[in-house]
Figure 1 (cartoon, rainbow, N blue to C red):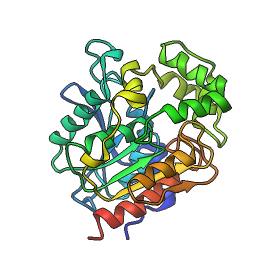
Figure 2: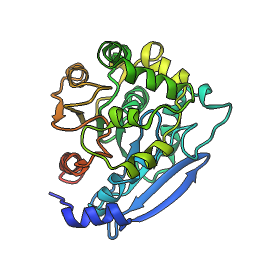
Figure 3: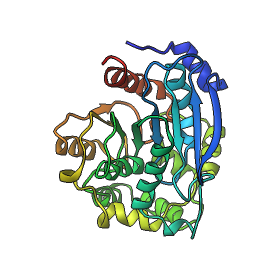
Length: 289
């Protein structure tokens, strides 16, 4: 089994030990990190971010970690996010546009990648699977195939202030940074890191949010079914464990629920416990074959 030394991976994540390049595939920003030596698998990894963020969220820790473990890694900023195209304004982009973004990057890679998606990125991957197959898929705190309505109702009942703050971000205004702490983190995060993430976050497309709520939900009967890992966290206010379990049940799988963590698994203090679990699973799917 491929393992990434914990100390080496932590150093790579903090200091960029794996070779990194930020480039554009057409009009799309892609952050790429390559292993120092020969890749352990010919299958690369393509990471898809969630709402309000961009490819940067994966490069904080996950891309250096998986590159140090021997994988060619790519993280895409969807249209209207990061330094990717902003044709017609953010609100013109739909979930189908985001699916086309993934297709565009996949076509530019030397081999079809495994896909790892967080939150909205998980929904984008589920829609992508209606059109194409991939070697493996991991959904982290993903929007469920039933859409966002359950999440919105749960927030309305249990965290109405957080729902209000998310709506402020959707409208382009800047809520209190503490709302970001509550939305993404259960574990402590220092103020400097929180403010850095806060300034990197951005509004989201209204059209995409409505697609995820009602108008363009996944159609499981049409989807390819590659090996799939479905992960949630114990303290996720946005996609709580019950919704993650619902996603897994629809695909005939068991959900993995990580204790003691919130929605932003790739940025939490104990991010490496999630990365190690994901690495073990990817190793079985992509290396030990």
